[in-house]
Image 1: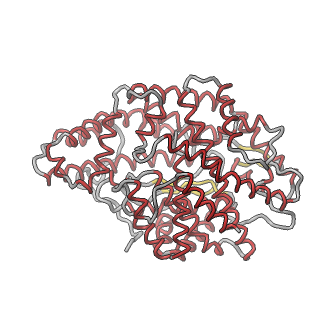
Image 2: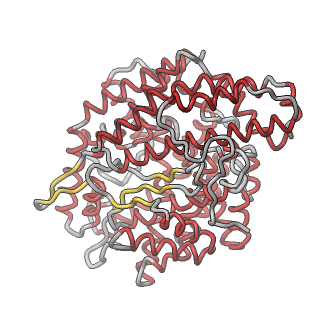
Image 3: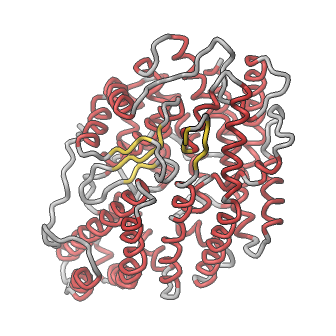
Length: 569
């Protein structure tokens, strides 16, 4: 039914050989759309298709500029190409986009568009009109460039161990060592290296907060949080729902986190569990080593996905054929991992920083889930139909982490290793919730108090961190590192308020896994059916198609946590 034989969107409106190089060559296509007469429903729908085609061409060009820059943050030409788009092209597109949005919603024939088919699309268009302000155009251009500076600063971070230079991602592998002294040394070196750029990142964050706050005020909002909720299209939940989620994590998740870390402490036989002990195994138990090189990670992921469902494996195969995978960690590469949909050609791009750890398998299958989502949504008629809510996007990725566990023997040689890998994954499913709550709650305070000082920010961070802290890990003497820990979260710099989605989606993924345990094929059918809808349905409807209820209330969280705890046992 579904295929990875993805086809590039044919061009009918924009010439086949057209490339985005400057505004002068691009503007005529926007002018054509704005000035075109529309007198029938058919011509209106053709106009929408032409606009979608132009959007896809421009979006894909912007994505490739960002991909290339994050793959090599030390290449000035790539950074300049990205900045040129942000400063010289995107700002000139925005007034046209607003005018085209108004032309659509104000057109008498807009009422003739199939209400169900276009409901979420038109809702998003109206939201964009409501938020658009001319005075925000230069601010948004500056923000696009400034946000990427986080990757440039972080991409330079390395530490030296035994005379050899490592990126922070590569160095983290030593936190799995049996040598506790080495683990502590690595932990301190990584954190000292982060502290070296503390002031630069603090200053960058100050500037981002100031500009984001101004953007919100310009649009008539009292704070950036309220503006951002609207911008992110959070039509189906409120800030109060986020606060209830925070409380539910304290009530129903933290007790399980304490059990997990207490068991880890006992397993290692240490008097106190320190943060450099979390990834370690007892002496005599070798660290999990699921692959040695990126090519092996790709091959094993394809095999794993194919065993789940051949279509899933075909998606990764296609990306590999197209060289749309950049997986290894290296100096000068931006931190983190992402799947970037490519609006015109269709097959997305996966970027990550693999260093041969268990964590890399989780990242790969996570981004692979996003990739499958990109393949499933690509055939939709309009580019706007493929703009799905981030909450369902993260259900796609986190569900794939859990579905794929059944086939992880491909990565591990023994049943003991497989068991440990699954335990590691389920522990991660639980222990990530407090961090999600911390990052989300911290941001609410940040943008409710945009004039705060660095001292106030640190105090609030520590207070929030303590609120969601387990009672097992001993952080004494590490206060300086802890106070700065927020700087390692790229979302704070690059995609503000995009983090609660991980919590909502993790709950959805656990719900999908419960279905999978009952009926594997039905669960995977529900998964594919929901993802193939892109953004054409509301968030609750997308969850319903996946066989889920859109519910992250404390009661629901308790039910799901009980299920995971049972599976862990």
